Image 1 (cartoon, rainbow, N blue to C red):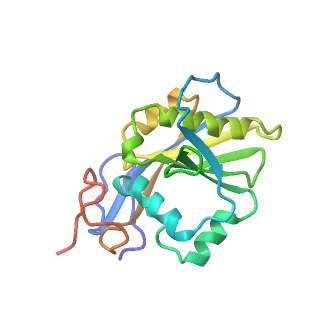
Image 2 (cartoon, rainbow, N blue to C red):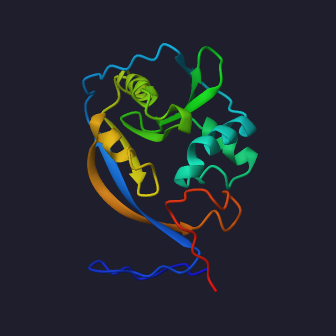
Amino acid sequence: MTSSITVDLSGYTDLPAGKVATIVTYLEMRARPLARRAERPDLSLERIERPDPVEYRALFRRIGDEWLWFGRLTVSDQDLVAALTRPGHEVYFCRKGRGGEPVGLLELDFTDPADVELAYFGLVPEEIGNGAGRWLMNEALSQVWSRPQTQRLFVHTCTADSPQALGFYRASGFTPYKRAIEIADDPRLAGVLPRDAAGHVPVIEGE
């Protein structure tokens, strides 16, 4: 496939067939925001010190197939575990009850303790819209801002993601500061994701 294209910054740019493009919005916060109440006593947060690749990918798919998440699906088990357990990277599962079914994923990257990335944040479809997202964000903010070295927390979302994501992050205290264009091979054409995943992003094949 084509490795590079020229982008028209004042108009339209055609993409080669088989590619997908999204507009990425980066957001940040530089101080802990006021807490927003979220009562979900049925949920618990568990730090996963040594993620099992099968369990992790199953949750990743349940959360992300609809939003074209594929970054964790194209690497080997060994490389996945290495990425998830590298120094400074923390993985959490949101579970129903203590030790129950995982229904949410939170990943925080403290590689630079002052400049922390909210690397992954998501819920299974059944938990969207019932306060679980707010509860999980409160837990994320607590993890980040309870550490005295934290000066900034940042995250990015894109136009393939849930249409609620950008508003949710802004309501959580994040402020947009940058945009980017991400272009990638369509993971559905390679069989990484199901053909019917992310129906809001049509599959376009070459002739």
